Amino acid sequence: MMDDAHLWNLQADLALMNPTTPDRVLAAGRIAGVSADDIVLDFGCGNGTVLALFADEFGCRGLGIDRRPEAILAARALVRSRGLEGRVSFRCDDASRPADPVLDATVALCLGTASAFGGIEGAAAALRASLDDSGRAILGERYWRTERVPPEFARDFPDCVTEYELLGIVREHGFSLAGIVRSGEAEFDAYEGAIWGACRSAIDRDPDDDGVREYLSRIQDEYLGYGREYVGWAMYVLFGPF
View 1 (tube, one colour):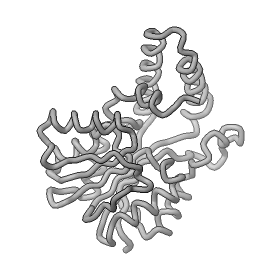
View 2 (tube, rainbow, N blue to C red; view 1 turned 135 degrees about the vertical axis):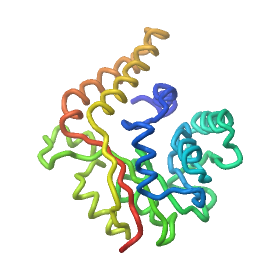
View 3 (cartoon, rainbow, N blue to C red; view 1 turned 180 degrees about the horizontal axis):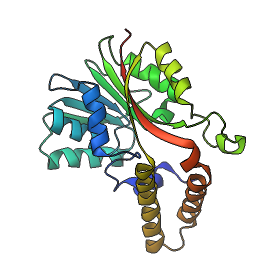
């Protein structure tokens, strides 16, 4: 099993650490009505790209939380390079159990980090707890495109749910679904291909790194064996109850 630091190094150069694009991320922000009046909280912010995009486009303020020191360093360097330090800040912390409460957020994001909360159920609970009833959230996650997923494949992704199941979960946590921004196969191919390229570069630098070689083989098997057919990824824009 590859450790978290090693996995981070394989994705550190990706602008977005999910199978989506800046245009799609901003489209989700527009559906959520993000504006200069908002304070955006990003759970598992990674390299800070999403908060930087939002601050540039919408003029909002933001706080990103990530437990990886390398991610926080990269995020702070990014906002410095864009002159956004006065509006966007980052904290190295466990998003699922932050040491200090986060107050006054009006929009909360959880993009590809539901696993930090134990799955969609925990992520929806964390998003709801971080907002008052007028707050909005964007939950970005993979989902099963069909209920007829072969069991041998479903075992590898125990946190994955169908979109209908996701709808029921977010409703149970006091959200209504306002919109969906869905990724397509081209976004998935680009995302997976970028990780494969990073793995190849790592192997070129260290031909004896069998861990990366095994990881590359496994993720290619997963993606082409069933991921491309059965797994989707989308951002779900959530508002408070009707």
